[in-house]
Length: 317
Image 1: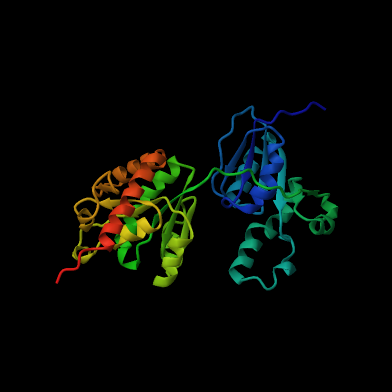
Image 2: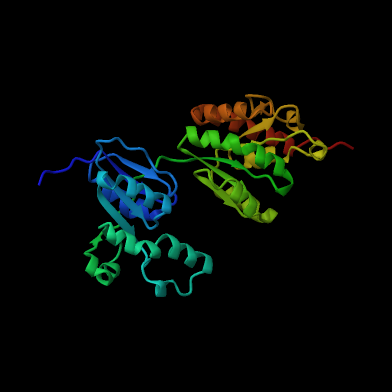
């Protein structure tokens, strides 16, 4: 039998996840074939002559069932990987109801369909390999994922009173994360903020915390670029420039709104950046700073000196 040359391997996953990173991706790297990652609703176009492999990681959606039905003759290998017991409803006992429903809908209910389509079964543990021995599963060993490049932390630590700024920043952050894979974004917020930023990669939403806890957070780790937009509004007219201190104490360089209270303490391109409230200008400035580490260091050092002067004013009688 002639060996079929695969043009691509499609990995179907709900989102980036440890199952893929620890098990599936290292295994597929050995093939030398181009690997494309797709979400549960993102189905690709393929050429008439292409032969591909399709790997489902835990979940199978109706969109992909329909895609496979349409392209079955071009899918040379169909693989399903699981690292939990997803084909036994009894194993779901004790799990939250919503999670149980998800597993039943996207995994358990697909078992018969996968078998009918002669899918290979890959599993993560000897227990699963033994339990589903009739399927002749392949045991996939966990591997340490390839080392990711060092991440720069972009952050905004506004409270709930800054809802307008939080929403304004989303396209700014989206543009930066798309252009710079080595940047992650940190923001403080509740479940609504988590939902707002959910679709963006490398976003970390921290729970609101007390002032002492926040001070400990700033002291614990290096952050690189802090954001302090201040949009026009009556409430913002009374704001102070305290975020200049927070950003500097986080050992980061700050971007601040031009024409705001920050102009009292920030000199543009000396101890921070002052920018008009135009999202593209902010995104471009952030990308420039990401690519200029020496400039970031200079601005941050100047900001430290400015803070020291502001924290030790001359007492007026």
